[in-house]
Image 1 (cartoon, one colour):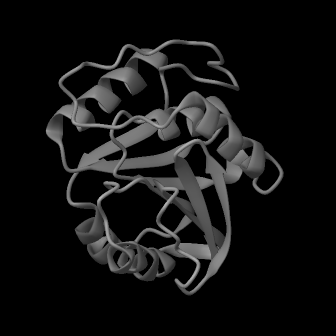
Image 2 (tube, one colour):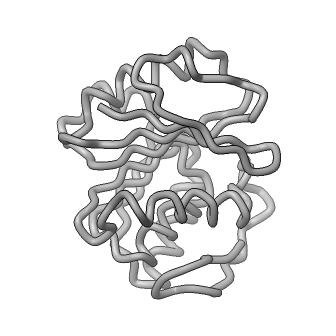
Image 3 (cartoon, helix red, strand yellow):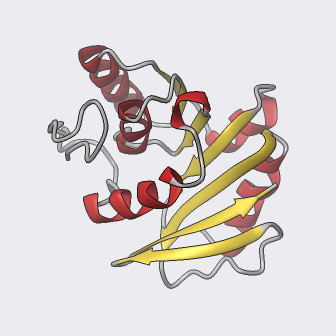
Length: 176
């Protein structure tokens, strides 16, 4: 895995084989961040990375100057890996172990951008639940982005704005 742009551009991160993850491809990350580049000021954006896995999305935000990044994952190995990598690169990422939907329900922080990469076996109702809970945690003009298998269409979920497909991955964008 590598960081594709910003301060840490080109840096490779060796992901342990025992992590139960499906890292976002470089092509997908590049497409996503090309879209965001024209929509947000990274340095002023408070980011919540749900189902953070390897932390790839958090690292990209940090590399582009985001200072307030919260990465949430259920798996302790993923959380430890993100903490270790963030420390190694001196990135301002807070990695928390917890169930993502519970975190959304209990946390009172407002975010400018919420990114979620849940398991691809989620049903539409599960994605919808993420959006419903995440909307309550968005600041004004906030963005929710969900990464999902391209065959799943999230168009009917309230707040849906647009979708971009990269290979087998899709990103659906939702606005408050």
